Length: 625
Image (tube, rainbow, N blue to C red; front, side):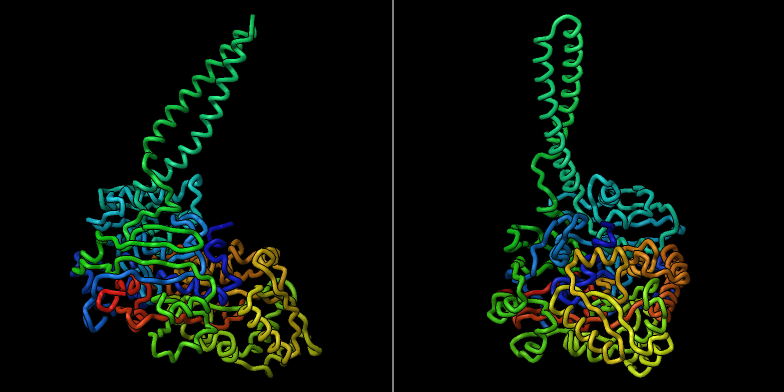
């Protein structure tokens, strides 16, 4: 499975996984810049960083919260699944929020999902379209006491690109040719070709930096395991050769002796490699189970299917850097595994949890609950339906238009997600820098839909095929859409399929109209390539828009930020005007906090998204749970 397929494996069940995925903070930046990112001025000192952040809408004083933070307490939350593998480059990762507590990013994104916020990376600059120089933060220490430096970045990028290490994120680094260490805190990235989305990739999984010491030890553990098996086999081969040599005579004895000597020589070489690997692996633990980053919390204990415990990192560099040495304020975090959202809510109301992200169906139950703090905020997702534009009835744009005009988006938003969304106008949400604000949601117009069907030759009605996921909310959406289409004379033969069956149908483009959408829209190239590039992970021949393909290729390579923005806004317009998909809504998430929890400023979060989350740790009133 390609990295894009793994990254967006939940494409068909976006609604049902709202809790799990909405709990993963976005990774994005502020309004469209007026100059290329390579000319951006970066803050260096902590004071400069705070001033820089304040100009963009963040604050750590009374504007942020009226009372001062207090140390202490263990924060209780819940997730539907255990964290999974804790090296973020290995799959599966089920809880990206917890993963991001362990690992700091090189770069964070801001409120419009642009990678403009320096974190472990102090600054970066395109020297030309195929070369970026990056300066790194000094004084950062990993959880194991080892230093963060240029070797950390180079080793991790080389590690990801090595197929032996099984990094699902490897394909994202395909354009990377090499990483050069300029000095202890400066690296230079060399690309095979122009790469405009590089900074966005560094603000994503490959830029979550792991301890080099721990990563090397993890490789040594893997090599040691491999060499142990190899050594066992070679010891047996030597023993067999010794028996053969002991019983052989004449010419056969000479051959047996030579065979024994070769086996012993091979075993001796493996023993030497095994010895070296054992030394490197001494005291090491697998990163998939014991993460080592530089983030605000450290892994303490985990029980798959039950809970994970994290403890405060007393040496978190960021708090000291901005003059807030008590950060993080909590002593620890515990994430309990509770699959049922109703049980999670019951635990929150009983005081056993401090926080949760709710399922949309629970919103009416909690929106007026005075015992909780209820916050609503937008997600960088799009919920939509997918057309097969190359085969079947939907090859005709008049049919695609008829279907799209037959959908009452307002009714769907109110009925399916209880009002927690805004009608969509294209792929990129309104707050995303790539969104074209000249586009408007397709209006509900059943009469126009009927007229278009007649023009397309279907005056007696039309039958189309498609599917939705076998999950309750997706089925609810499917039935609602099916009924709306029936009102204009379209019979949608809707099948309810499991993910494996959907994957097969998707690969064969065996549908006319089916569930779609995209979760976590960061760099716009990922969505655009996935849906509209002939080689994209979700295309499989269902779309072949020549103009869109030209724009995708141009956007992928363009390094000037202003030009790149225009390319993706034009791309969104091109696929919108061709009705490549039926866009429904941009969803919102709802988080609940107990009143005792302090420090969530929802207005600031709306403005700055991910960096607001990761630079403003929560605390308990009075320092006690």
